[in-house]
Length: 471
Image (cartoon, rainbow, N blue to C red):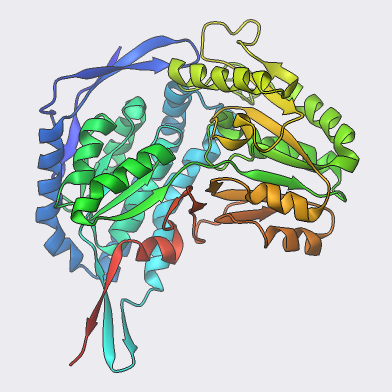
């Protein structure tokens, strides 16, 4: 039984003032593997005060000093990637064959932030004025459990690049990962107070970050409902916010697509990371003229996904993160059936032989219409819906008929046509004939998928305020 009983404030590991604790559970077995002591409002306030004290000096550092810090952060985190992968597999249930990619992006985020910083002009002439981009202040960071190390490193990287100080509330369900990561971040030698991390509940520590007058900005990744509550809480102090929220991403299959390549790709886009991904392409739009062909091929691919022990390199789908998440996904599967969708493969309950953990059957629905609950709401599990369309215009209309707009996929043989369809989709990122990532390009969503952008120059400027000087 491992006990995480420390937080990080003002450059040192300290014992939380809070005394409550939460269980840490291995989702593959349902067994308790540890406990985390939860920080409270007092811990949050002490962390904010440390960040506030550190801000004046850190905000005046130059590019070279910040780039050196980012390089040290990279160099400290990179050797720990294998241990962080093991912790994520155990604590989150992600398949080991996929988690290396996810965790491997984390140290790289410090280098991409350094690249964005290196080329950035903080001072520029506009007409008769000098405009100076200034660091905002203390940034409150709140991260989720589905890619804990990646989100912490990515958000920290751009705050440091901009000259801001940081207070972080990671998911309490990721405490083992956070504890390992903190050892690396401490080793990098940031000035005291630049980084502060408090394990705790969102409704306690996160709520204090969102309301506290000394926090200038909140950077949050998580559900749309929580994102809205953060905006409301921060309104009193007019906090700046960057919110990366939910998604219900469409995957548009064009009628000239080669199903031998696009069907596996579409399924991968929908179920990667156990389906617990805001960018998951869970609405698969298929031309009615090829619907039977696609459903047969897709059912074969989904039915062949290996579900099981996340430590097995052959596993494609591991358990969901918690019993609560398992119940949530089961509720959506039941609702899909009740509303008239047809289960092609998967369905309610646990896979045979996997009753101990929080495993679900990867589920593919047919006969789905875009007004069904499973087509409207984010499920956050390996549950996919096939929706038929008649024309490219109808496909675009269905794809855009969503409260979300985080990511979209288009797959077809003619790249010019696929790009033309992609250009009509209302999403922050559109992927044409592939599943790709560009860490220097902006990431974020349209509509209720968020506010603002992360990564690259856009992520850097999200931490800066322009000051105009006329002299």
